[in-house]
Length: 228
Image (cartoon, rainbow, N blue to C red; front, side):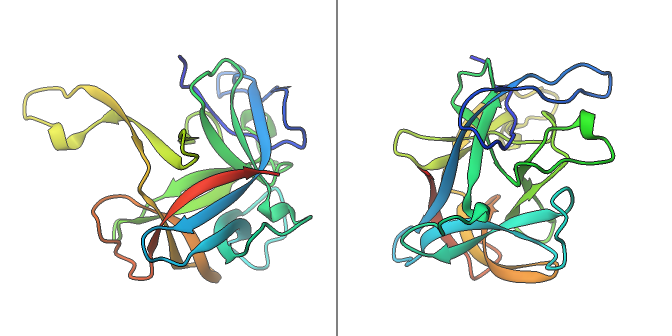
């Protein structure tokens, strides 16, 4: 099983996709794509959250598809907005990856015009962390490559999980090298009222540690996908 994955948005739902090259001129692995999907969130426990996510630019005046970063806002609705591309997402992995994991992408034609051959197209989802909080933003931005994206997948129950592979610092012992481990983390998704630069709204976020989010507006949710 191979875990080298990355993201790319595409109009078609299947097929192999040629990508850019790394700094040494070596080609990135071709990708396979699934979708489009809508992303659904439903609150846990007594939460009334039930609706869909859509991509929105962090700067209200940013209309350039090849630039800028988006966040995922939540809208309560029984169905995603028809004919609205901001509700459409794709899930991709390398063509030789049988792990079932990959990444979510939006703005499928976007690229970084300064180095278009060095990066993947589309805007993949990534985590942005801040030292003063345990709540990370989920953002989507151009300029992705295999080394700055993160794996996620969908379990047998349909719920999304984040895949972590590395060293668990809770098991570190002075003078010893800890073993590498991997884990699927499913219960970190939250919807919080977040201010991201020039916009504010209910935003898909992630609790990085602990049971209580620093942001008091956060509500835990399950994230699933629906084929469009």
